[in-house]
Length: 90
Image 1 (cartoon, rainbow, N blue to C red):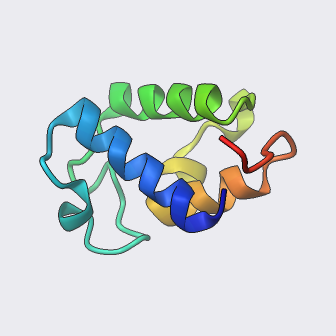
Image 2 (image 1 turned 90 degrees about the horizontal axis):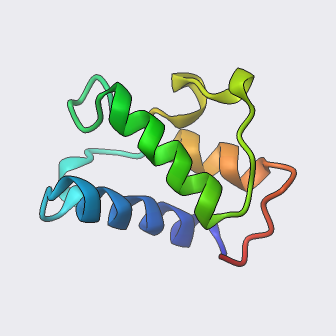
């Protein structure tokens, strides 16, 4: 799975779980903060991380569970794509 497919899976998850209709149009750019932009609250942030763990068969350690790694599409793509367990085939 490439970065574009990973990005798309997050957008689809947002659409499926938060009923935005089209999260891709709501997210202005890949570095837009999900929390500051009102896209996710703290519970949604945790749910997103659980989704990523399940979908990509990876374990996110507590130290990495932060806005610095998961608060935008760009941050998610960089973190998940560089994770030691990521195989890119989900």
